Image (cartoon, rainbow, N blue to C red; front, side, top):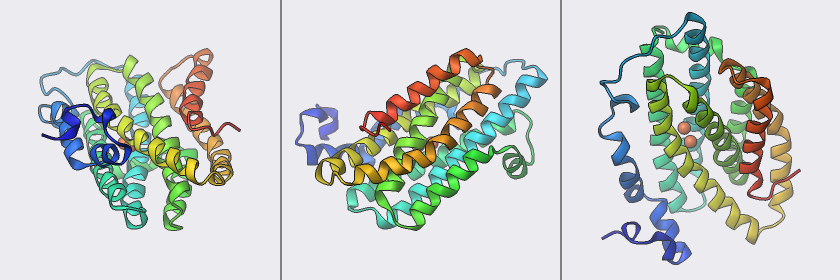
Length: 259
Ligand SMILES: [Fe+2]
Ligand SMILES: [Fe+2]
């Protein structure tokens, strides 16, 4: 029997990490919600009638999610090459699978909504700040900068997605809601990896804190700008947006990266 089926938190830290960053753990985590839902949804669920303006805003939002998922797919696959140990490489392989699946279900959702020229539409509707974020993330990956890449991807990007997807799922049509709920479960694992990985490094190498603070300072405006645009598309009232921004900051600051 695998350790994860008993009490993973009782295990010594190294054994615990080997367990939760494995395909064994991944299989157990995903089989409940992936096996019975093609493209992340119950196939019998009926499409809700959407007004033209709501449908159009939803398409733009999903296109931007597709940009974020593509960035995470490209970054997590590139990071395998310079990950510092085999456990991290295995975890990133599970993350690549998750991110590719997220991209796939989002593209399928766009097809359901009648989008045919997916590549061009995603490109055309992409938010400039999100594209700038993606460029920066991939630069960290190309520079083999492990801490900055983990921070930008597994803490900043994942925190942003986590907060936005949760907010969106609460008010979305039933199919989009199911698709997002499946994605959120995976993003929680990715966020957990980032926290574990950087939490341990910060304890052993405190000087990386100031380096990561600088990364955060650079990326925060791009994240907050993306936030603003997405919440606008979702019709979240202006008065509620600061609260969502704060939720994002709370996730990032859990690691002690207050500015
Ligand atoms: Fe994702
Ligand atoms: Fe993710």
